[in-house]
Image (cartoon, rainbow, N blue to C red; front, side, top):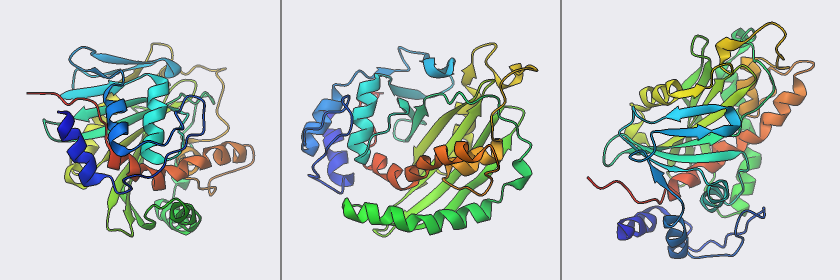
Amino acid sequence: MKQKIINFFILNFIIFLLPIYHLTAAVDKTPITQEEMIDKVYEFDWVTSDTKSQVNVLSSNAFLYLNQFYYADILTNYNQVQQLMFWANGVEYPSTTHYIDIFIDNEKSYTVNIEKFTNDGYIKGDDWDNVDAESFIKELKSGSDKANKERVKNGYATVEDITWHIKPNYNKELGYVFYSLLVKFNDGSETFNSTAMVLGRKGYTDITFLFKESIADVMPTEIDKVVKNFKYNQGSQYTDFKSGDKIAAYGVGALVAGSLGIKGLAKTGALAAVLAFAKKAWFIVLFPFIFLFRKLSPKREK
C-alpha cells in the first residue's frame, strides 16, 4: 500500500523537492522531501467510513452522514488538516476543518474540504436574478493575471483558461448554491474547482470538491448526494428561520460573487462582506496542487 502511494507521487507531483515553508504555528515549517511527506501524512489520524458513519462538523452545528457513500477516508484533526493543505498548496488554509476522500468505487474518488461555518446571518435569495455567470467568467479571467505572477514566482504553472463546468445554480428548497469551474494551465493540466455553499438559519458552510476529468460527468450527482447528506441540527436549518433572526448584509447572488472574488453584486452595506470573500478566488489557482497530492491515507482493500 505504501509503495502505491509513493508511485502516485512520482507520477503526479511535479515539483519534486520544492522547499516548503509554513505560515502558522500549527504547520511544520521544516523543508522536507516528497518521501518524508508521504511517510508523515500516512501516519495522520485517518478514520474510515467503515468505523465512522457520520462526521460531526462542530463549527456548523451539523453532520455529514456517510452511509450513502461507497467508502470514505476522513481527516478531522485540525492541525493535521492544516499541515496537509499547506503541503498540497504551499499556503495555509486556516478555514478548512475537514479533509475527506469519498470513493465512488475501488479506483475513483474525489476530495471534499469542509470550511468553518460563516455566521453572518440568514442569507436571502432575492438578488439571485442579478447573477450573470458570463460576466463572472470574464472577471475571473481578467483577474487571473495577478495570480499568475504569484504562481510564476513560486514555480507553478499559470492559469491559461477558466470556463464553467456547471454555472451557478440556487436550490432554494434544499438551501444551497453551487457552481463548478474548469481551470486549465499552461502545462496542459487541468482541474475542476467546485463549491457548494450550504445555507443555514444563521449563515452558511462552504464545501469544496476536487476531482479529475475522468469522473466529471458523475460529479453533479455526487455533489448533490454530499449536500443532501450534510444536515444542520434541528433549529439551525435554513427552513428554521424565524422573524427577528439576524439577516445577512448580502444575498445569495452576492455570496457567489464574493466567493469568486467578484465585486459586481456588491451594494451599500454588502460591500465589506463581499470583499471579505475575495480571498477565496485564490482557491481557483491553488486547488490544482491538492490534486498533485491527493490524499495519502491507506486506501480500502477489497
